Length: 173
View 1 (spheres, rainbow, N blue to C red):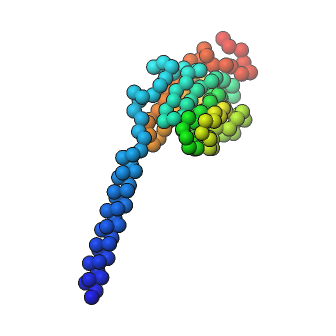
View 2: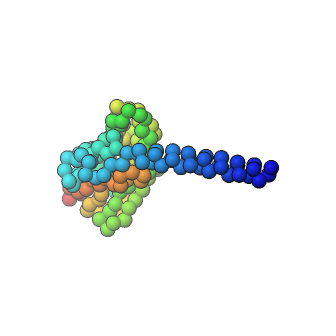
View 3: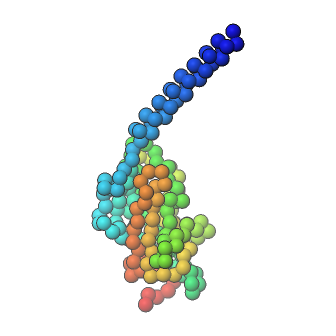
């Protein structure tokens, strides 16, 4: 009797794992994966003002400002618009945004700097949100502003030329 219960339990467990495995495999295979050839960009090298759409989410780097804090460091403030073109709510986090200096070092956002607008949170279908994100970085000539989709498509990179940065509280050379 115990042997029959053991065999029945083993058979039911096998069926359960088979169904769960099939379900997980079909859901993963049905995921939307975009390769970079399908990304629509204004140019091959994105710059301030350029728009890119990736996985139904549109991004535009509207403006970049620089406010020096001392002789070596300053705040890069990026003004970003994000549009949800999907039919469902999109959850966005600013942890997907970084700045890279001309030496290749990456910097995360600085939440202590007072910025305009809020980018993190839910974006309803068809809505556009706009906000600023600040990064404390060493003063350099050029930067790259990077959006990283960690789970799907990789990165989108905007080249930020020093000559197109709006300088705050100092005069441009």
